[in-house]
Image 1 (cartoon, rainbow, N blue to C red):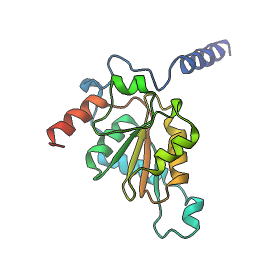
Image 2 (cartoon, one colour):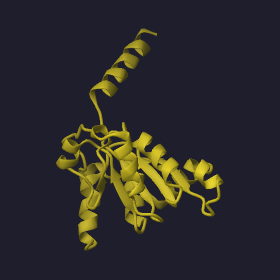
Image 3 (tube, rainbow, N blue to C red):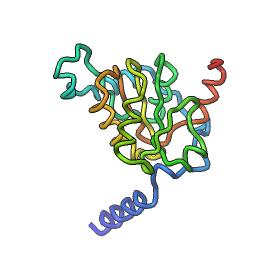
Length: 178
């Protein structure tokens, strides 16, 4: 019992002292980037599929595919295999400047008003899949939920649950000739 309490307190302390703005030195290290199988991404899509949003029930013909949380490895595979993907980085400015995915749209939700945040979500390209991330999945789940509510026209949406693999993706993207 004593050990469980200590473990719980340690976990709480770790959560308090980490956030989307934290970037570890080994982030994006290729040795840590194990390729995810396409089946894992498909499995996550099947498990994370959720029901229609209220706006969809109001008359939109297409159903939004809500993939939910993807592990960093699943997200890397998803990014490499999904055409016309829009990557949305909701981390603070300082973290974004330290490193981000090539061509990511930056919406620093911690430093803008809710109205501005919603405005920026409404400006995302319609009809394209969206992947949302920050650094430690502090802001990403809330952003994911909000985009789902505001944008039923986005056909597929997910977020990265964990440290994004910037280096492997950016190297791959560069090799593709963008």
